[in-house]
Image 1 (cartoon, rainbow, N blue to C red):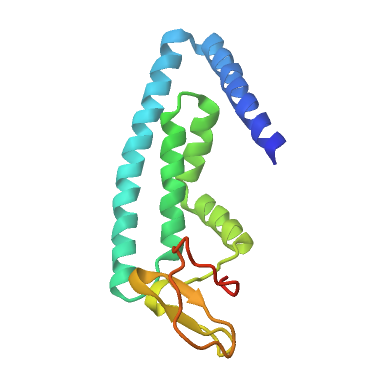
Image 2: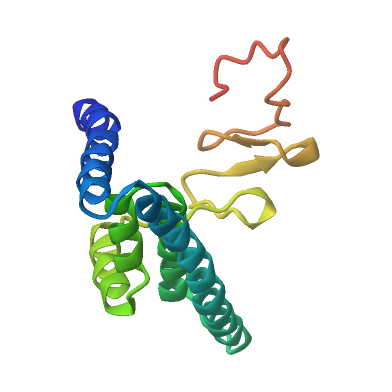
Length: 168
């Protein structure tokens, strides 16, 4: 994984430079710079128009009592797309523009969701424990698991003088 990240850090700027040279030699330096500025501006406009409609869909889903998971993924992908469009370069602009196409976002979102592993945890007073793991609520939100059959009062977890060998 580390090698892949290193290759991306080195490879992506090289690809951008190569494409800049190719485009600059084909259309000239000034049009290349103007095209880069135009794509950044187009990214901001697209983010604003599609972002507002996405926020409205998220709000309506939440008002209906549903979790807007799909729309949240689309929103994150649109933020990535806008960042890619703001980065100077034509290769990143091409990927950013593709991310603004809803079917492409759907395909990426489906791939992300199929690989996702969701773990739901709770903390604080809403935490539940099974019969084999009694939990004692200490002051100010600290928690300590008591072994089965344990009695007596629990000690604070952050007490440095706590010499209880059963403390977990």
